[in-house]
Length: 298
Length: 298
Image (cartoon, rainbow over all chains, first blue to last red; front, side, top):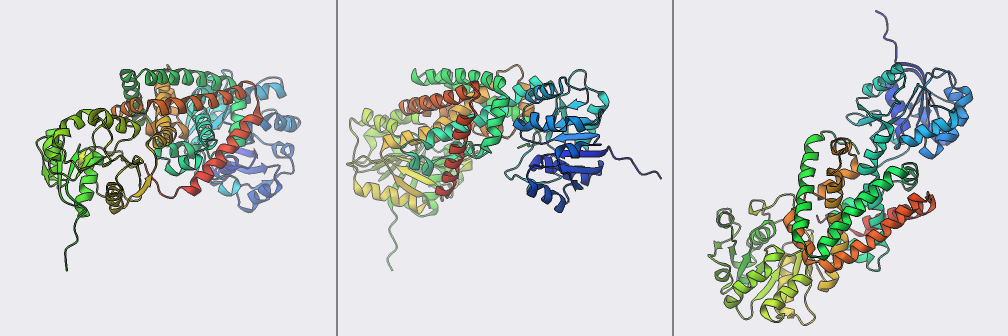
């Protein structure tokens, strides 16, 4: 019986943080590649990747990693995308599939265009909606993406074979793969993830600056605790997300601020009907949301 | 050996929702009263209170319940306080201790003054910071207050014996009793509980009104889910809280809006330094908060 061919020959994973490391581990565990080569500018993380068996081998540079690779995964902070692309460009196979795992997608597409001069049909931008309180390659977990959503944002003229292979890779990691336009992804994420995080950071910072902050923290009830949990997220990563998804985030902030201002007016005017109507509608929307979302990405 | 005297002879609990019912059950379980009489305008809940053993007996009116009571607990919606006070006023024992469980405290004090003409020294306003996803007397749980905070807001000239007995009652329910001025309580709760709930209701409503709402709900990530959980809270109760705590809530909304607007400007101006500084400060505040709060009120 012939042995089944793996999906890829040589996969280069650039950036061995939690997401890059977990994808590398999942590629190996599910035998999706003949060889998984890793690179990270942090030499200790890179060595640990080999030691822990997350990658097959460590490259000495990003360019060396992508040399001969049929799949290149960029798992670096979104701000580093351009410099990594510049570094690997000369070594890239002409037909190599390129994907990424960044939280914003229009920015990635723009970075590719800025460095390569165009968006090759083999570029399939991606965003696994998965994470963990932990970070770094020690937390790498081949099961991280199981039952989680992965959003791919291929251009209209993306290569169907490339899209098919990246989709097959994530499905083999047990993820639910969705496809949409990059701009649409960024709007949806701005509303459902970026704005809530901005509000949480802002609220916690507002309260912490208050004279009565000890009391506020001591007597804080449930509502506040839910906010503080997401305010514990990585400040550098979030700075980069907000800089990268500027336009969609500004739009969603403005809509939110406008609606909050209407509630403020209702409170000032003692307009209980408006408050009740909005709160009831929000609770109904939440119940609807509960029904139409089965899995729990974090 | 003489049998220890219970703390109270006859306790009247007006309003048998989750909090009133749980306190009645805790009074009985801990033998803090000779007799726990309940009243509720919902005849079925009242009958259930007797059937479930949450109260010793059901009164036919609020006035009948408080007649002869040495402790009166108002556990009605904050909006109903004045009408209940008017109803019980003629039947109140002159030296009866009066307390409540409402989420705002200046409003309660104002209601007492409006109906009784002054704030009797035996009035000890209270707010147990406890709750549950459940509601109604079926969810009554004598352990609901264990390890939770109860904030009492006695006036400066409150009767020390009355304060002592209400404090002893909550301690016997295993709650952590704190005392502060009513205005201070309302400011702290506006910031830590009321504002987060308002933001959650507002955000969920904003998103639900969007054309892309199905997508937003389907792809929603962790940040959004934390928000939607508190947007599932009871709309009527929250309307009343916002109407009752108007001034403190308006103040905290304005501070929050101002700070959020600064972050908006930083994003618009691509000012990563400001974003990083605020996010880092918020995360540090959150870590501080984690350390100085041991128990988990909800």
